[in-house]
Length: 333
Image (cartoon, rainbow, N blue to C red):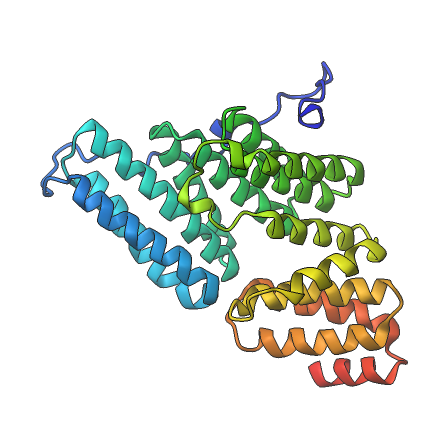
């Protein structure tokens, strides 16, 4: 992975590591006088089921619907860890579940537009994963935060953290995890306007995923990472880099077999198709696609889809003289 280990110039400050993104305090420090009940693996198993249920709910519901329930679950899990008494093995298992819960809760908070909350939650999760000595989980959390930073105007930090997530996870991380981390590195470079490193990382992500069948079973929380998801990222990167001739066929292929019950993701992917079609000088088709994006976005409480609607409408402004486009723009206004 040469693109991620470029030599550092002598006068440059050291690159960040995951340790630089830990919380300033220690929100996971156990209370000095614990009065809670004894916690065993059964309670850890119950928490694991609730975490997975929240993750599945996020597939079909948006951040605005899930933000408060996710926060309640996270607070309850931290309270169990801090107030309960548990063995070393149970302690590590609890920390691992808190880390997983923080990843999905942070993702939900980000989707709800609560970016400061999301960042605090992700940092808490990184701390939990590191204390549990789970480098793969720490990388997933750091990559999720890097994705948010890249999408909210902090592109340089996003690229640095995405690289730190990959390096911190180490070469022994499951292939599916490395593919995801490399995907996020590719996106971070794209948002930073660095096309060549983005394309190299994207190619390395595909190579990593190809190794998956021969490797150990990946963590359950990576169930959604597959060739289709990498294709989605590839198409989005081509769209961001204004290469519509590559982006449009990929997006159409993805959308032709996408689960329509995942409304938020469908709206997001259609938004990139609308932009790519506009870049390809197909304003009428872009307008028709944009109309679908607006309709779908109106049914979900997602800051991501709302932002993508704004991006699509802004891109269509250059074609306002086309009747189909003007109708969409005037309708949105």
